[in-house]
Image (cartoon, rainbow, N blue to C red; front, side):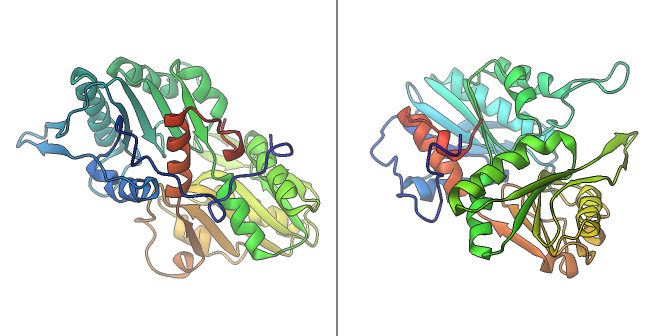
Length: 345
């Protein structure tokens, strides 16, 4: 994928515009309005107007305030649990709004969910376990969703298998490549913090080699999770003397990243930079990120770092805007253009 096609870069990309596309319409529900407005600016359009009302008993309704009949609609809502609305709240509002759009005659509705909730439970690991990725897909389909766009979904294969509608699984790899090249660090070693993330790490490693024209090492750390307890610290790879880039889809407690950082330090890494697309930063994350084993943490802004207070951990944080990447993907989907150089699945 990366060797034959030059990688898209937000720094060199030509600004796209849907301003002349009369049938295109972008909505952003209130909980993701800032990100939606940034995407709209990248596309040279204004967000389409809508109304969200909450009632005294906790129920709510949403409706478009412009005609959507016969139009191709994008609806953006990042489905992380936030300080005001839970992931369940956001999901329910998004599904109801998609249903309202279809009832109002929209020709096509694409759900843009940079962070997809419940994607981590994609297989049974215990007897009678739920497979929530599949249930979420069924809900989107039942609401009338025609396509789904997401950013660094936890398991792209499970995502593709669960969603029977067209889907695009974007990755933050183009953003991370740009950032890494700007660091001018060599040698580099891209590390997966567990065997399950090897494909994600290899995608970034190949892209870095292609963009930087220099060999990039690789490695992975063993990991086993049972009943919420993570164990395993065996590192396999060539990190000695290198800047190690630990790549993951998200950081929650930070324990996985810290465990991997310790493993690559023990293997001789000179510097450790973590790159995790979604920063959830649940309990204990601040302490893990502040640990001196980790030099820096790079995330995208699809999930704002509202749980990470000012301090040593926040000082290590670098936040990359994902609006240019999302806008490029939406432009191409609307125009029927390929997304190969976006490193999308």
